Length: 332
Ligand SMILES: [Mn+2]
Image (cartoon, rainbow, N blue to C red; front, side):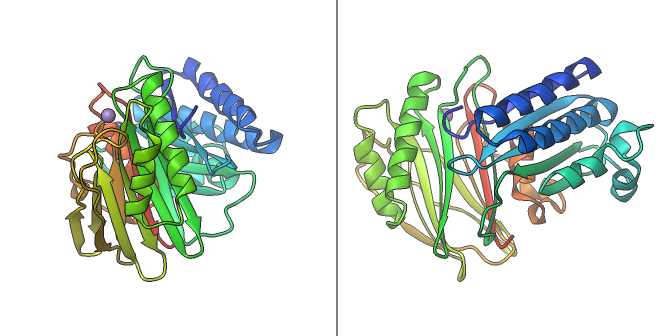
């Protein structure tokens, strides 16, 4: 784990449930989240995994460090099963573990600090739970991300961050050139530089990252700075990180200029947008294909942002590169 990487555990049969549980426990330990969080994360991960086997036709559990330094673990489960038809009943009855009353989805909701789920007939199910050792003090921004290394790589060459301070949020997605350890080094250098310059306008932040990346392979990156009261959004990008605003009657792609931070930045320019109440900001690396359409997922834009991030990864990851999606919305 370097740049907020998501660890994926494939779960297609009951014998793999334990792997999801052990991985959640191990990551919580490595992140220093404490025994209580580790135990709760293990419960959530194994219930999510059990649900994949029982009702999803198999799928993946994703484990995502939250906060910087990490203070929580996000758990997503993604499947392409037939979907849960009666969510209310599923929550009450412990749908995911038939015959084990009180367990299943209801248990996940009780143990997770945050819990949400989206499902549609024929479109599978995606659920998210967050387990925090210390909840974020501010809830003026809701966000969720998934950041997965190319298959076969141990580290992800993409990275992302969310910094919230004094009514302003800075969001970034970075994509180190290529993949593997050298791409991860570039992504880490970019995130460090972005964090140090996070109180600056996006144009300055991109400039700082460009300067900091000279000794690296370079990276594509995009920075959004959002006024959490007004929704005013300033955006600057270099290279092919995609940015979009969706929902609440707003739908537009955000402008990034050609270039590679660290190597080629002829023009660094900042653009102004508006993120209305209820709209979502989506940013993703080029490991996600660009032809997705949020309208294919009715109701998803108003749910926990990690659900849209997870579904875009599930349905549109190209599979030949690291893939990162960051989704955010004003208000908790
Ligand atoms: Mn890439």
